[in-house]
Image 1 (cartoon, rainbow, N blue to C red):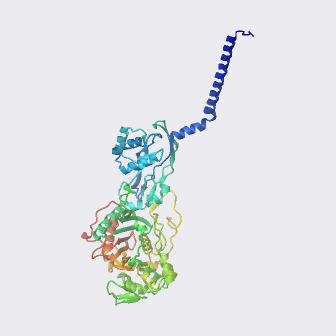
Image 2: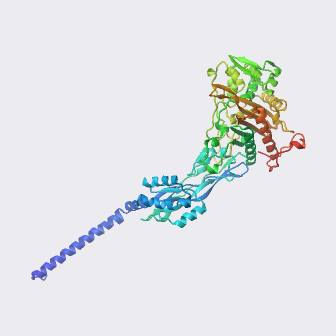
Length: 588
């Protein structure tokens, strides 16, 4: 080695060597740091970057379609764009508000809408919806504005092509495609499918540069209802006319095929357009066919007559003195609508005598009558397939008062729903068998239990009792209180009802407020359809069930029979054929 003797050169050499060592150390530190960042901590740091510049969200699948019994689409989902905003973290509130205000005209945003959006921005939300499921024109307008941080996402919007038709059955969905009422709620799990998941990646300026699908969504299953949209339309049209003409508070009509228990129509008025759901009034939204309890009045006499004959408490030839037109039970006076004289057992129900019905009912033991009422399905839900169904009120025998047996005989001290009355009526139409009602025809998951097609139907009354009550109901239409339900050429079995309503202001029953009803089936010898009609508080001089509900039964049934091409037993007079021709559907 050459020894460096020059002190100056020695100092230069030492400094150079020190610098090289420092550079080498610096290089090793940098290299180590790079290895640490790009190898050892790569996964963690990548996750942090993605977390700071990305958003994971659910992909809502396409909701299953809903069909009527003939394959007509009642509800479907359509893809539409939605607008959202991803705000810059350090941008002042004024900057966010300025961006949102630029969208005000294009999206028809109200000041209230903007306040809600800004509240979420100020809460430091990283993803803020501006407006869901917008039109194509709105999409083009917003796109042209090119507001930073504003982007679009495709979502599904529920659409009901027939508008208000069967609104109470269908219900409606919310903005997140979740069923909120009707079959949309009851079968939400089936219809909604399984959510997927997506990831939106952003750069530092919140400009979208990539969308990744992490999990594909699975679309919902279809649902086929027993509803026939033609029969439904006829029921809704005639019901609306009747409610408006009688100035009733509301009305409901339920039509079924007795042999299968399938609901062919379920109409209510007032109603709503499910395309506007959930922005509808509570008054219009409630489905009173399943969610309203009421005292049925004389329509309940069907059960009284059947129980009396089934338990042998009365014979068909027995007579009942109704000449006074009133009867007193435990301090309670009950009157008939007119003095009817001495009536046979059938005549009591043909002319809907309260006095005679109470005398019949008082011959029954309490336990017998209670068992009969329960057997007909009262006091429990029908499980027709709609949410929010009421089970009514049927008190146990040990809770009955001294007047209960008499009151129940004429349809008081018991609360029922329209579908319960229809199911009980169908027991008579089906020769004593109880066929459960249902509103869903086909689902991928078969139903189980009493509501399942093919499930053994329980016998409620004997075939003889059912035939006797059917004959009484035929005469009630032909010569009794239900004469306004007559359709020339067809045999009809039915029962009217006019129940006084409790008025809280009076502390008892009102003489002016009534619930008017009719329950019947046609043709009575081989029923093709059964129907229950309820009108709440019809105004004016006509309010009896035979005056306002029976004619509505006639008008709807005549239309449906023409639609089903059901021939009359005899050729009716030409003036009796007034319903419009409808498409052919032989079997409901």
